[in-house]
Image 1 (spheres, helix red, strand yellow):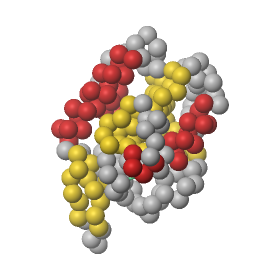
Image 2 (tube, rainbow, N blue to C red):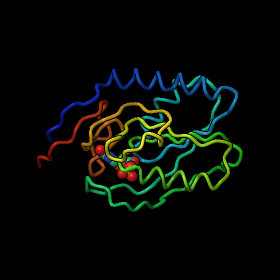
Image 3 (cartoon, rainbow, N blue to C red):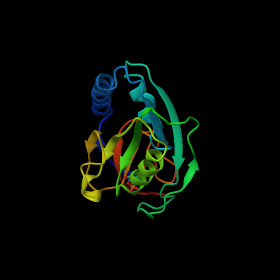
Length: 174
Ligand code: 5GP
């Protein structure tokens, strides 16, 4: 498999620390609920919560992704819903990557209907060009070009989630 490193491990770690610091300041005394979107966000979630210094709880939901394709189908399916109610909680959605923004918009509509005290988004990667909307993401790790990336939780056909860096997926060599 050909890959080109886009974001080095150290650069990722530093940015995760910065995001966690900002979140810890903004959510001080708010006891936020962090909602991770599986599977891609699990590595980011695990790293960011260990840098967040304020009390918080977390939950996960799972939605369908692209399968073995690298382009969006536009169809979002909930595979696992949240365990805990959101009513009156300060909810922060933790996403791995925002591409077209379809998944995020769908999740936000769903969660907003459950009357949280607030609802914001932290996304590690944002393909801003792809969805042309700066207002979806409140905490953004990196803006990246419109290319398919893998690593740090992100997969191609369920593989490569273990890479400690973000790479552009170029081709699969059997
Ligand atoms: P959207 O609905 O914003 O188009 O796509 C969001 C979801 O598609 C992400 O949560 C992720 O699962 C998947 N996705 C989008 N772009 C990429 C990418 O470059 N690499 C990988 N591995 N998944 C992506």
